Amino acid sequence: MQVIGQGAEAILTRINETVLKERIPKSYRLQELDQKLRQSRTRREAKILEKLNTLNIPAPKLLSVDDKKMQITMQHINGQIVKDILNKQPEKLSWEIGSLVGKLHANNIIHNDLTTSNMIFSDKITLIDFGLSFVSPKIEDKAVDLHLLRQALESKHHEISESCFPTIINAYKQTNPEAEKVLEQLNKVEKRGRNKKPNSKRIQEGVGFFEVENTADTKVSPSTTMANEVAFSTNKK
Ligand SMILES: Nc1ncnc2c1ncn2[C@@H]1O[C@H](COP(=O)(O)OP(=O)(O)O)[C@@H](O)[C@H]1O
Ligand SMILES: [Mg+2]
Image (cartoon, rainbow, N blue to C red):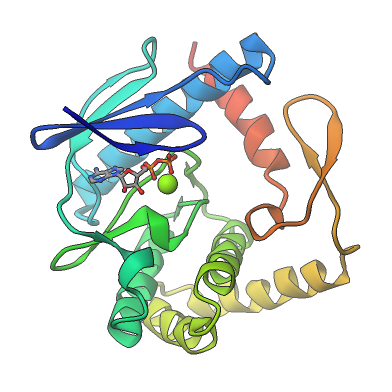
């Protein structure tokens, strides 16, 4: 047994060829809200992994889910995190990223946390970390997903993001038949972002608003995601 990840939300342990992902309580959240968010993220991740497995889109195989213990077990993917190697093969990896995201969107799956830390490369790229993902046919949701990816690239791969993103988009066009509409919407999303008041934004977490720093990770408000997640969790009870 080996701890392979301990992020803000979850502890990940490798057990032989499997990974146990357990969502840990967050004491700063109201207990009931925290319980619902962890439960809905656990269910979401399991549901999306299952869907990806049936669609043959590269993602870890789901082995089990326990939404009382907030645990998922999945296949361990051997490889390197794309964040660590993007600068070694930017063209090839960018093409693959775009092609994969296009496939996700063509199947109405919105990842909602597209960063190069959530991609593992072995002989191909495998996407991970679907706890914030959801199913939606909306062009807006797909455009925002791409916008978040662009922001993640600008923040973590600043020197190469300007050349990587066009390659990602070209590949995206090959796998998502609706690409033109999504890209048109992406322009609108980014215009909206530029017109926003700098350095602060409003984020709604379940109930009530608070101001946060305008960091790359929070430029697009997750308010609807949070509210929907709780609704999703409640409906599933
Ligand atoms: N199925 C997996 N196979 C191999 N490594 C994984 C797997 N899932 C997660 N990891 C590792 O654990 C890290 C954190 O997992 P992730 O699902 O992204 O959770 P977090 O919400 O903490 O970002 C990843 O960046 C990766 O290094
Ligand atoms: Mg992650």
